[in-house]
Every structure is written in structure tokens, then in C-alpha cells.
Length: 224
Image (cartoon, rainbow, N blue to C red; front, side, top):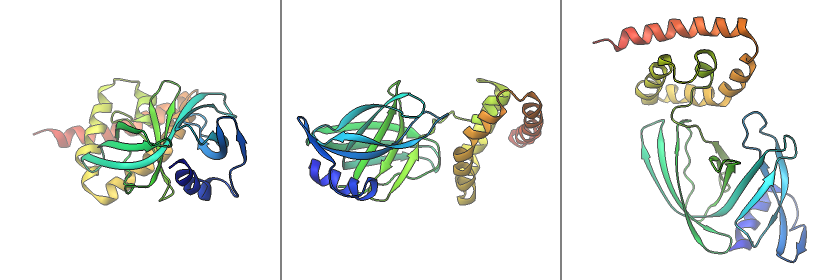
């Protein structure tokens, strides 16, 4: 099984065969992206084929993270158009069966077929941050249901305005294809914009004023 999964992985991750052999087994190079939002650097890391899970340290920012590689056995999906709950069962490189449960609010779709290679990346705290469908060549950076990067940056965590914006995302935007596209575009770029606002009080004030108009309009529409 390890040879089959890594064989598929090499086709997308690195040219040529396994690079070398060590005491633990053959070693391949797998391209992984740092799960830390401030970094996101992609680099090639050595992967020993005998192990499904490995720990790494980002070559750019030094953050610790881990990754797990296996083959999809079963996938169950529940939830609305944007917020989805997944239960994934996959077999590791040694044939062991592992189960993963996670929720994503990015609006992206994760739908690997049984037998497809799947890669899961966790941050230093053990939080699942990214899932990769190796067969389709797609990756999803998981977004927590409560995530609202820009609004949190300008209002602060726990602000009542955040709840208004999340309800609009879940109840209105999630019903339409164009709304789901907007949500996905926001989660691709929102974290970068939130980082940009740090230390720029004038820009933060302008964004707060603009969001305030949106929130006021949404509150008006929510009234019975």
C-alpha cells in the first residue's frame, strides 16, 4: 500500500523515483505547505514510506507541524452549502485504519473517491488545518465556522457585529452559487487583508466604517 500511495504522490510531488533508502525504509520527497497563516510556504520534505505520519519544521518560519498520508476508505459529509462536517476513514501507509472528523466553513468541496490518496496537515497545536485530495490535485485550507478574519481584526473577537456577518454568510450567501463563490474568495484573501490592517489604524478605521454600514443594513433586514 505504501508503494502505491507514494507512487501516486510522486507523480504530483517530485520527478523521478524515491530518492534514497534508509534503515526505516525508502524515502520520498513530498511537497507540503506550512499551515501557519502568516507563512504558507510550500517546500519539499523527506517522507519515510514506512510511516503514515511525520513531524516537520517549516524551512521558512520554523513552525512545527505534522502531516498524515493515507488512502480514502470512506467519507461521510453533512451540513449546509457552506458549513460542512466531514467524517473521513482512511488507511495509512501500513494498512492501519484511521478516522478523522472535521468541520469546514470555507465553502470549498472536499470529495475524494474511495482509494484516492489523501494528505492531512496539522499545526503545532494538533489542529487540522489543510486536507489534500491527491487524485484531484486540490487542497482545502480549513476554515473554522466562526472565522471572520477582517471583521475580527477591526472589531475584535466576540464583537456582536461578527454574529450578524456570520448569519448573513450561512443563511443568505450559502443558498446561492454566486454567494458561495464570494465566501471562497473571501477566505482565500481575508487572512492576508487582516494581516495588512495590523498596525494601520487609519485603514482599520475606514474598514470598520464600511463594515458598520453593512452590519446596520443586515440588522435592519433581520428585524421582523
